[in-house]
Image (cartoon, rainbow, N blue to C red; front, side):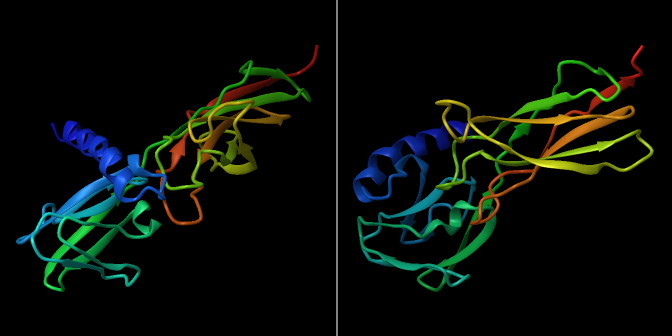
Length: 228
């Protein structure tokens, strides 16, 4: 039921926020907080990274929203709307007051993402190249310029008794006309000399702050055989 209400809220934001903020270009990412005589309709608003709150004043008097971090303060006239800059699109707990009296907050949570690891075979001949590859998948939802394209870290170890060490950092990028921010590809050619376990980590974030959770692939084990 909560999920249905959030979907309905975002759909409504697409219509109203497009009219209220035609230059933003992000109407679909807006979620409304209603200002009333008793304070905001949701004293604690929890939403995923990439969505941002828009305050709608349904009271008969103006209200002032002020964030404790000092990055945003605005007044909303009766029947009007107000919003902050992009900081509230990133993971964090952002407290604010309404008219300096009513305490409230916006809690932004990280989005999930996934990364895979595969190769043509689990067995290679000694001194042969093996192409590791996979897909980094992240939601399109997110702050501007925070698409999924970015670095993934390839790690390896010889057995479970040793820690993983970094082999390389490679870029995951869209191929052809694939839409950025959804599924992007990465690859790396390696030359294992002995039995090796590989794993891939995705932990990069956009410069504005955290958007996604850390993601790990499943381990991929490679055995090395001597040439006959």
